Length: 99
Length: 511
Image (cartoon, rainbow over all chains, first blue to last red; front, side):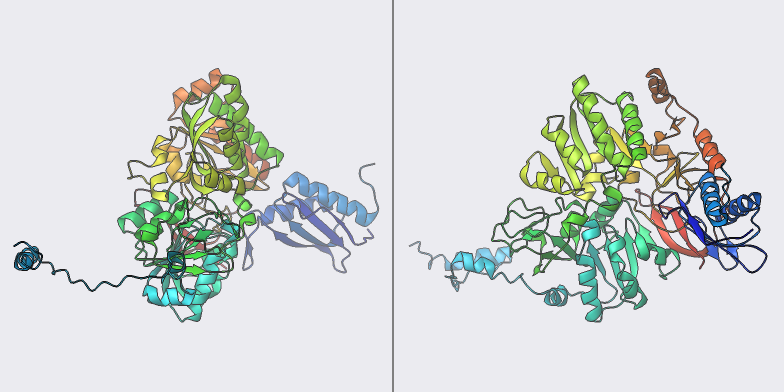
């Protein structure tokens, strides 16, 4: 699927900003910066893994398997993350999944 | 004959018997007009002179108050000067420390400050301490405990540096100024009063040196050694911010309304009751929603205690609260009320909330509304360390008021973003569950099983009560389970209980 640079969300508390960009290599490359995930060495604590999982699942359900994703999270709940990722994906692909 | 000359031998004998000298008349009267004399008080010196004269040495304890909160300028100013003068190894004992005290990080790295006692830590300084900045753990005490530790000598202060909005040249000082040159106002100096009284040396820093006598002084000249005039002791506009902002957040307002309903139906909402609201948007807002019920039911409070807010002042002016007892003025309206209203009195920290001070105002407190970072299923409360393991708050009067009041109500949201506030076990124990009665969240109200009669009264009033474990489960169902944090093995903080015992320790977070 052809991707354009696109984003959705805000940096407000309880929200997440998702930025999607095309990638040359296969797979989803998620760069996460979160107020509820503590990075120590290679390990990510608190909710880091869970947030990445929600982003990955949401994109894969929309058929996106090759992209760079930057997620700046301010403590968003899973439903919020899913909504922002979906909106960013729609803007990136131009394919309206809500119609 | 019986002239004074004839009695000389008898005078000498009387003096000898009493171990005293015989009076010699070598007195010289000072003829300077007194107005000029007062202004020339030898106590008025520069900061550097005050530090030198105070006898401060490396390794000693210096103290400060935090009444200007985010607007405080005294701590950074004094510690900068101490660093410049080459002091090392000092113990900084402030009533609290806030974001604005970030420059202390450098002074800790440079060995100027090697030990800290405080009620709280916030911002970058707190983060650095949590990551192991200091060799010695920070000692955390509640406001009542700090006052009492100072009064008993457990926390001995060598030199206190206390900001005041007015002082005369002899050191009669206040948290406001009645002169036309007034530059700042913080209201009550409650946290500074034990320091002024018990410190070996007390230095007042003021931005308004007024003519003697400074009226309605909180600190008396008898307790003051030096007076230093500075450009500014604090920015008053920054007092009412951060933890003591006036909330417009709809969730805070919902919590406040629910908490007010609990208070009204608790059995303690009767003529002559007393009330305190702690920092945090929701708890401060409860007063607003009690007001109408007080008017409707014809109930008046005898006193409101603690951090006094403009809401409290309003109720007082309307005749709904007889007296205001003010250890800390939470906004400008409260500070101005303290200055102009004799029924609004300031109180020192140890007379406010010390466990072993019989007259502590908290001993006579009916209802307190408090906030929390976390509450656990045993009703324990944490207000100091975030769920990310980073220190980010202050004990304040939380454990003092929860323990002493007849009814303690904790208001906190079930979730803050993705952070759960009702948990299996609090990150750090600050207020034991044995002193917490009710927890109010937007998803339900829980009552400590210790208080079945209270639970029944609330239920009889039509308030739905849930189990605290149900609140925890609800939080988990929404946000999932967090992977545990990488705590290290270093103790970066020690939490003292108000009885002087050690209650908990805070471990470092690896980085």
